[in-house]
Length: 402
Length: 165
Image (cartoon, rainbow over all chains, first blue to last red; front, side):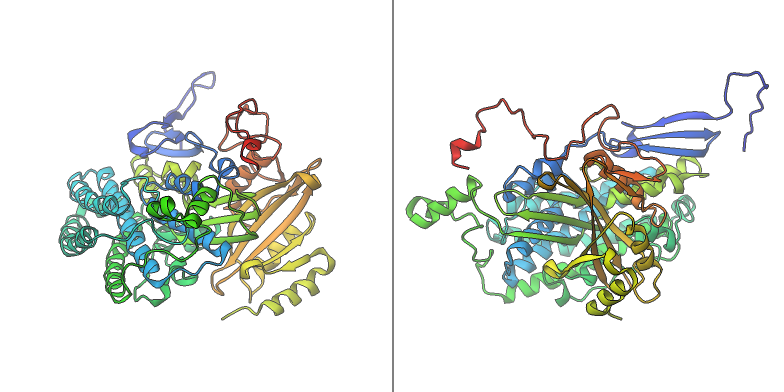
C-alpha cells in the first residue's frame, strides 16, 4: 500500500490525513470525514456527524402534535412534504382517522412532486460532481416549477409545513392544478434531454459504473432502503409493501438496478422520476372524479376550523382555542408508521401516553442509517470516486442529524 | 408467503419459553418483551430462521420510564420477503443500563446503538465504537432522559399552571 518509503527514525507517517468537511463544497452538507490517504487512495474513513443536530426528538416531547410538523420539514429538506404527510399519517393512524379519497390523491400529487424534486437535486448534483454543470441547471429550473406549485397550495417553498392532521389547510386552487398540468406537459422534454446528456455519456459512465458498489446482502445488513437499496436489485418500496394514502389503487412500477453502484443508483432515481410522473397523472385524473371541495377529514377536535367560523360559531371558537393552546387530549397508543421518503423508509415511532405531546417520538431517518456504510464503501477507492459515491447516496445533513 | 402471527408466537414461545412475555398487537404490529440475556438469541433466531427471514433491522431506539426507573431499548425488525414487521422491547434498569450489542448480527445497529447511547446512556456491551454520535463528545448528561427539562426552568412565561395544565 505504502508508496512513500520513510526512514525507520522518521517522525513522519506514510499516509496523509485529510479533513473532508465539515464545510466542504463537495459534501453538500455539514458533516466531516477524516480520511487517511495514501496518495489519492483512501485507506480509511471516519465519519463525524452531528454538526447540525437540533434535538428534534427532545423538542417533539414538549410540543403539541400539530407543532411537530415544522420539525419534520427540516429532516430531509429536499422533500419536506413527504416528511409532513408522513407525520400526519402517523397521527391519523393514532387517532384512527380515515381521510377522504380526494385528500389521499391530493397528498399523492404533492408527495410525488416532492420525490421528483428530491431526485432531481440528487442526480443534478451527481452531474456536477462528475464535472458536468449543464444538466444541473436544466433541472434547477424544473425544481423551481415544482416549488411554485407548493407555493400556490401552502405558501411556502422549501420548508413547506404542508397540510394538517386530517388533510389540507385549503383546497388546491385552479392555478395550482394548471401549474401541475403544465409541469406534467413540459417536464418530460427537459428530463429526456437531461437523460440524453448523461445516460450514455462516456465520461459520466466512466466516472460512475462500478464506483461505490455494494452487494444486496451488504446493503440489507447496513439497513439500506429507498433508491440505494433498489439499485442493488431488491424491489422493496414502502409504497407497495405497506401502502398508505391509497397507493394500492395506483399503477406504477418499482425500478431496480443490478450492481448497486453509483450508475445504478442514478438510473433508479431517473426511472423513479418517470414513475412519479405516472402517479401524478393518475392521481390528478382520480381527483377530478371525486366530489369537489373536500380537502380534509371531518375531525373537528383535531382539525383547525375555518377562521371565519371562529369569529361566528361557538364550537369552532372552542376547538380553535383548544387546538391552538395545545389542550387537545390525544389517545394512548404506540405505533410505527413508515412512508417512502426521497431516500428510503422514513419511519415515525410514536408513543403517546395521552396528553398534549408525544411521550416519545423517534424518527427513523434513512440517510442516517445508509451513511454508516460510507466508510466501508469508500475504503480503497480514489478520493474523487468517494465524492461521487457520497453524492449518489444523497446524504442530506438535516436528515442525518435530526 | 405470509407469516401467520399465531404460529410465529407459538414458535417463539416454544423456543424461548418464559424469556418472552407481553405479546400484544398495538395497531397491528406484533410486539413482545424479552430480557437482555435473550435479546441477541431472539434476534439471531429470527434472522436465521428459514421461514421467517427477519434479515432487516429497521430501527433501534431508547425510551425512558422514570416512574419505574427503567430504560427500554426498542428494536423494530422486518422480514422483507414476508412483508412482516416485529417490535421487540427490552427493559433494563436505569442503575445498570447494559445490554449486548446487535452489531454482531446487523451492521446497521452500529450508529443506531451509538445514538441510543448518546441520548439515553444505554451501554451496548461489545459494541465496536460506543462513543457519542450527535452530541458533543464532552457532554456529561444523557439528554433525552426525562429528568432533563427542555428549556430554562426559570422562565415563567411558559409556565403551564397559567394555562390550567
